[in-house]
Image (cartoon, rainbow over all chains, first blue to last red; front, side):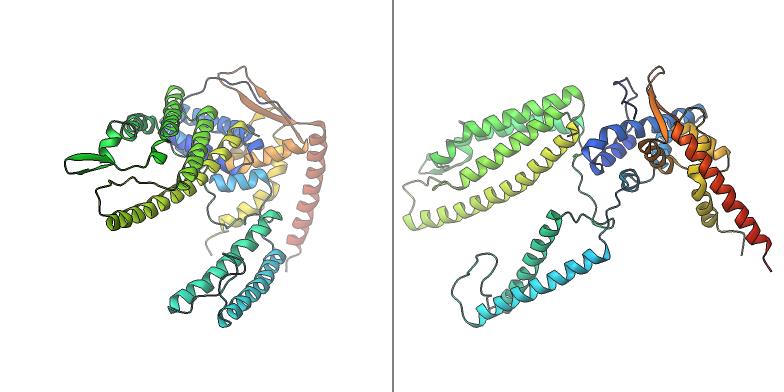
Length: 327
Length: 110
């Protein structure tokens, strides 16, 4: 097979071409993507050159050339020639296993419920259902259904049963990015850093009682400021790299993945702290306790949700990095 | 009925697209060049259809491919390999047999 050509100057890609190539890259195995994209782009440019010679404006020619390739999904399917379909035997096997699993699970759950079991034998998976209110019971049955469906689906995935051609759209790995996004981030990130550092922090996260300003954040949380600053700093570097190269690069994606993972770790560690708030001593103890409880729960929820979404983001960036490096 | 449904004719043409493509690759050509030549030969085919065929034929060793980097930008050229020539001749022979059998069946119509 022929070797790929050395990098050569090429016209700046139109949005239509770049978007098409990005979508196609997302769909192809990383090892194939670089080579296929070079070949497909070369074909697009040949089409564009020919159309321009015949008088078409470049933008129109690019759109025509991209349209002549069909959808990225259809092209990727034809290129890989590994049409991923869930055959009848697999579907029937899945339905049968699911029926057995769900029925068994539901029976056990109902038995535990009717027997008035106290506590779950397997927390999160097997335990009695709530009988009052009624929608708590329905929600419990639905949870059993979803746990079994998800668990079995995971097992089939691990066994190599892959998505069917009609499965929901493939999630895109490469986020849309324009230089304007980085410029906005380079304005917002320093503002965030200023807000999270003294003296602004001690004024913003504070209450004024009897003419005195009391900072609210517990020293245990404040101690993480240096880590937060580090993460913000790395994000600034990432945006500067992207602006300098006018595109996402492996370095910028690696920085993104690294800082996101660091943020996840930081949020998890912060969520395990004993105290989030330091309330003024002058506050009525009962009120202070209520406020502290409420704030702790809200912050805990915020930290866990943020860590969850950031973990997904980190995985996607690592997959994108793997794709960009072609490994 | 107002003539043959174009989709049916398209299906007939798709069946011989690989053979026609091979027949055009005695001399080296690049992908879009082939698209145009196929169009002139009455086989309107888009890049999204032709590219996977070229790629598969290259992977099978039926086509040799090389990047030409002498132009303004690199361009990939395809040509028949020795095994590709043999395959094209065998497919052409098979095509003639199919064509003769089809003609004979059509002539025997009541």
